[in-house]
Length: 519
Ligand code: G6Q
Image (tube, rainbow, N blue to C red; front, side):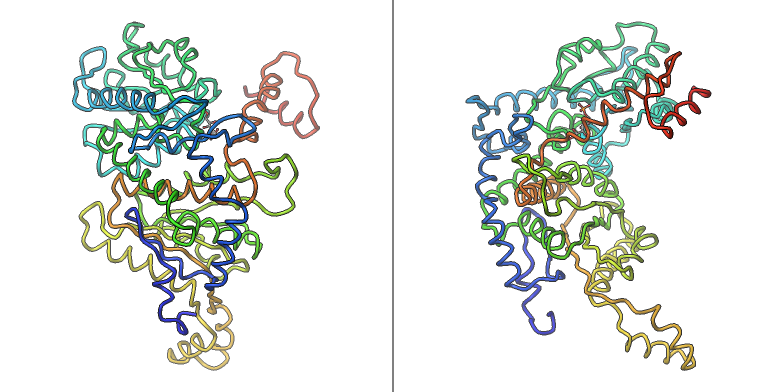
């Protein structure tokens, strides 16, 4: 296709919001793209997009609006939920977060013994962990040397213990980050942190200098002992996995400052504008979303790899894994009918070049083809002159190799040139053939800044939206997660009770009996 069409790269690439997207290495023609755009129109992506931006309650199973776009609405135009403009509340909380973050960063806010805060521990899980953690890791180069960020999520006690072992109670600030303030893991970890703090400080009066909360459940946070002035609220129209732009991003603001956070928001806002106003044919989230549908529903390919060629973006695949799979991993449609088509793919990935030394083999030579997004920054964040060109060369070479492969004739010629005998050439050739024709998207930006990162995250959020609409899903509920939050209760009761029941299957009963001996 490239040989026949010298303009293919120009036609199938697009640049906006600081991001360059090359989607020319996909199995598509102009006709494919036109038909995919027809499909998006037929599914009324534009109508649903307007409904989301207008604050309609498109999350029908929870009767909620879906308004993460309001959190980064830098134009400050009114956005109403139930007839009420949400922007004054959004701005009020942002301002409070800003003055708190700046006061901690400048050393004006101190711990109870008067020492400056050095360690910030965010205690949260899922949407209250993955977004802020990913952004803080990505923005490491922008974080002042005197501040260290830690994220505790797992209810495995090793997680909090390891973090607490490395910090000093006098200089540590805990953020209890939970939309509901009832999530078992977060509450247990928060109580463990509180106990550890009290064991050292010995005085309840020290708590307000070391514990803050971000939540929609102001009452529960107050019961935990967080004073009202240490509480940063958000609202039920912010989905957990879309919440890093809200008070859930307090750790980000502490890390990169209120100015950096504003840049993150404005990058996302630019992408919101792009998504809202560009025609579908020139709309990056729509293009990525429809290409995903092309492979998922027309080729029957059910996984998609996210490969940032960036050590700083190494958590981006984990973050998107939740964003995408929790949103579109559904099998009932909006009307409650079981779907008879495939919905969200498995999202996975790892930073390059490390991924080349692990699973990329399967992408090159496996029996299935796996579409992949290659993401990178044209300029490095750290001055290591020898490294960056090599990183970039690998980034590009992989997409080229996945597309062009290595044909039999090439392999044979190369082996012969090395002087191998004819039978050795015959034996080795099949193993060295790479079929090629494996599709990739390449996303490139000038530099990894808060602004480009904001645009990048929003690009994928809207891609997920587009796909959810095409599959007629509610991408904004998570009943599977809710089930998980209650499932462990019955087992825990049997693990801890003096008279455990035998109500489970034989395997579960057997495992409970085994563990009862050690607990
Ligand atoms: C995200 C999910 C889920 C949620 C966590 C934490 O969209 O709903 O990952 O973020 O379960 O919930 P809390 O913030 O309520 O503790």
